[in-house]
Length: 403
Image (tube, rainbow, N blue to C red):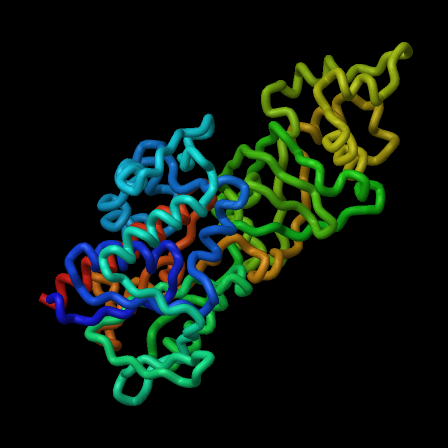
């Protein structure tokens, strides 16, 4: 086994985790990365605090994924507790935030990445940057373009961990999809996920773009009449709306837009206040202005502006009309932001195109991991966990098939 040569293409969380496993067994592991440095998307994800996983019970955790049955064996083997233990082994402590999300104590991704790369280097893993994968030769050698020209490599096994198609400037450009499709690998088209959605605003709302909508809840109806709900913050933007509130609903919102061309996102601007209570709080008063009444009822400037945007002026003094739109504020969405601006992508290599060990059915000894696989999940640590877990799973597939 020690003489076996394994190539991993892509130095993000999935690829590095695959190398972590394989190097433990003493294999000759080389990682090839298209960019001048590794983990660029990983570092960007940690810019505001690296949410690496989530502490909720596994039965809830697994249901955050659209392909839960497929991913369950992978996630069971590397769940949130095991991720915390792995970080501890690298000398990186962690904590659970009030939302249940798990972060490294230092919050940033860089310290973890440095420790991780140092550990891999000690085990003999070699990282080669500025190597852009171009596909296969006729005899299935790997083709790379480098600053020194083309390089051909013929390993014993290859793990592709090339990411999806979001943030192409950081390395995930999705070009691999055309390569694999030309080899009759079944792939679902990649679509934006955890992204902003387009809505049309009047100039009245412009002063409030970039300000957060806090303490709100949201829902969308699917074609079965089900209400799919979310509670988080959102931000109104020049193009529409973004933030955790809509990221959590990006899958049903995307599906509705693809089917119908548009969809409606409903907001409850004051979820902790009943409609009847609001009617009472919003009752007109000769001694108070509308602004003052709304403020005392709990509406900040952004929420008040959104009501004025959507409710005709002649109804601003009608407490029932205002209460109704507070509790069911409809925002018409006409599309998604471009895939290049999305946090992640849905779609990818279908489960049926792979063996149970994530090897491509019709391309022997070539495995796929991470966001290349056809699964989708919201932000909150779920994306990172599945990348880690699938990278490990593919590595164990290599070990099983090489023995």
